[in-house]
Length: 358
Image 1 (cartoon, rainbow, N blue to C red):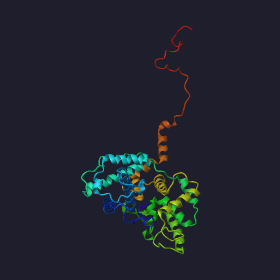
Image 2: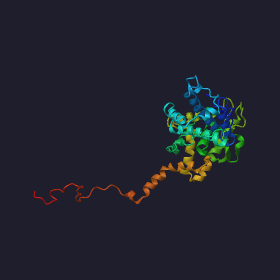
Image 3: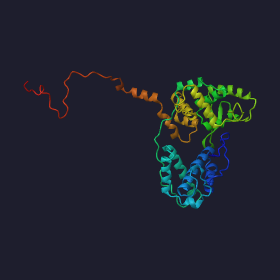
Image 4: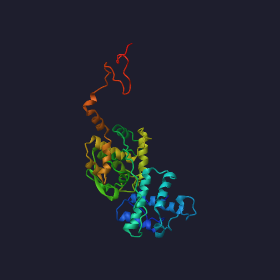
């Protein structure tokens, strides 16, 4: 399945050739006008391609039985203008029951459909009616971010096993200390460094400065020395490169490195990933670094502080201290006194208490 996203150059993509012109125009609008990152635009491409393939199939316009093989290049504006709200609901039903998509995935794909029709009606005036306008994106249950404990993080750093130890130790150190995203890490160039900062290009191509602590500077010092000794360095500006090819590491290769390191530390099978290391950095800063929400928002590159506020719910130690702070927390269990018990409502008093003859 083509995605048009070059893993070695995550800030670039090639022209979209297997989709209708209206969809191609929408993707160009998202990238050029709204300044969405290539990875975000590529996500819209994949989700909307599936949507149109589903419609072509359900309308009986394709001879192909496999959805992923359906050609949608012939879909025109007239076809799109005939899409009904009922068909969108049918698509959501298909995602849930046939593809077994989780609520978060269905919500994302519905958002892509809604954004496309908003472009077709409001931004480009190609359609007069928006069939997705009144379909609400379901509210999702907020889940607490998964993260490594301080002890697990230390164990991970102590158990880096690799044929390029300096590089992989540096990667894990930056993830755990800086809270950067995977795509941000692989996109770092040597020119992005200045003194104790890195210039990071985040979501929406927004730049931010990430400050490096002593552990990061030390890890980078050792890695850059090992990197400079590589005999076949190809991507001379890329920070993280392959030892074998000398080319920039892709996102999947970094994921494999993290998976191997987690396994060596006895932390595999717990759902940890590079993004969970980002959660870990944010959690450790909040719990141990006395960092407030606005500061954490800037460090993580969040657009809204509401995204960052989820980390206020994971300081379990503070919650434990709060529960222990009430004066009644010291009232321990006491044996029942010898006073006669009150009869329950509707129950006649004991015969002795009632004064009846024995």
